Every structure is written in structure tokens, then in C-alpha cells.
Amino acid sequence: MENLVCTKDKRRTVFNQTKRGLIMKSLNYKSKLTLLGASLMVTFAACSAVNNEVESLSDEDIELATQIIGETVSSDNSGVMNSIYDAVSTADESGISYGDNRNKAMPDDDRTGRGRESNYSYSYDPETGTHTLQYNRNVNNGEFSKGVSLLNTYIFKSPEGSFITRPRANRDSIESVDFTSNKSGFVNSRKRNSEFARVDTFAIAGLHSTSSVVSIDGTHHAEGNASGITKDSLEASRNYVVDIEFINVTIDKDSVAANGNLEQGVLGTLNYSMTLTKTLGDRNDEKVVEGTIEFEGDGTALLRFKKVAKVVRFSLKDGGAEE
Image (tube, rainbow, N blue to C red):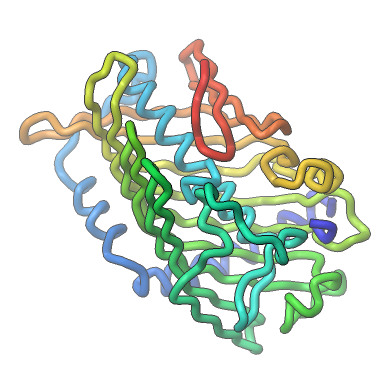
């Protein structure tokens, strides 16, 4: 991670370029993934009664919303943090290199799936500078299991703005990366199950060794279904759509080096908007939940709900929550 601020104007320029180019490219790639995303969208197309009054959220709604955000963001559940790990890695035809951990075997109880990629394929387009990776991550660890199909793209650039064609061999030359990730899959655990389709689009700068802070502009979109056992031992299920926007998100390289993980080095805020859909007979009841996610720099984040006086701390690693 030693190669993990540039000015705000520069970040915005890079990010706008990403949005104009990489998003369209990633959407073309999505057809190569599983059909899960399309099937989930059909579910949401049913007639709905939309309720935008956040105050009307039930305890069950809040509990499931917390679960969904925890999974959508956490590393073990192939969420935003997992994508950040991927975005600051390097890759070529031989595989993916995860910074300082590139030569270390993942522990037996690891749930991220990093380092255990299967069905790996790689290509490079010299005209656009785009590195494209497709692979699967499957984990079966006791009561936890997941299966995810991913398609990621990278455009690595030097401080001078030149494409880097061999990022693993020239890691020290990387200053920025435009990154997209399209993934679909499932996560099952003892009390929670979910299916999802997710898209991340990041513009990252400050990776060069001359910088002490990495800056990340980005967005995240997710659709899926989540079910679980509530605190009252009741089964609950919701379809959902989540949109997240990065606000001044940074990674402190010294913290990453000291702690050996990104979760304890990331700072900043995410704005989120979520639509929860509950099927009631032949109609759908929708509720909109909005708020912020604040990275604390200690491996956790604070989940805040707009207009609801409730704050939940959750783990950026496994998504586990505590009030």
C-alpha cells in the first residue's frame, strides 16, 4: 500500500471523464455477467405505493435498512470496501496483486475471497488504456458462504497522464486509476441472506509514492433482495435499490501501513438513498430511506438516518452493527 492528494479540481476532472467514458463502457460489459441484475429489476417494476415519509419507518424497516447498508458497504460481503481494495490493486494476465499483501496467503477464515479468484481472464486495449478483468469469487466458510461474478476495468495513469500498460511491473509509476466494477451474486449467513447486482465507478488519485493521501471520488449503485431474522426473532424480507455518492473520501497511507488494512485508513462521508420494497398481496409498499455513512478511521462507520434520531455503528469488514 506504499503506493497509495490531488487538488479538488483535478479530482473532479478525472471523475467527470470517468462518468462520460467508463460508465458507458461498463454498462456494455454488464451483459456478460449473470442475469441476476435483470431479474431483480423486473421485480421492482410491479405497481407500487411509494411512501417518502422517513418518519413512518418501522423498527423492522430500520433494522433491514441497517443490514442492507452494512452488506452493501463491507468488505466481506463484496461491498464498497471490497471494490476499493480491488481499485487500488494492480493486475495483468497472471492475476491480481494486492499491494503489500501480494505475497501473503489469505487466512483460512478469510471471507473477502481476495486471492482466491477463479475463472480469471484478462485483456488490455492499448487505444483506451483499459485493462479488463473477469473472474469469480466463491467462499464457503462454516455458516458463511458467497458466490460473486465480477467484471472490473482499470485505466492506470502516471503523474504525467500517460497510460501504464504493465501496472504490476510498474506499480511505483501509478498516480491515478479510473475504475469500474460490475458484480452480481449472493451472500448467505446464519441470520441473513441476500442476492444483489452492484456497480461501482471510482476516480482515484494520489497513488504515487510522493503522495501521503489517496483521494476517491465515486458512486455506487446496488439492487437486490435481503432477508433476515430481526431482534424479535421474526423473519423479514425486502427488495431494495441503493445509490451512494462519495463525499471527500480519502485513505491515509500511514494508517494503512500501520494497521495492514484499508478499513482503518479510510475517512470521509457517503451520502445514500435507499428504496425498500415490501410485497403485500398483489401490491408493493415502498419506503425511501436517506442519510449518511461516516467513515471513522478505526474500521467502523456511523450510519445516520435523515429525520430519524438514530445512529448505528457498523463494521467495514463484515457489516455487523451495534447501536
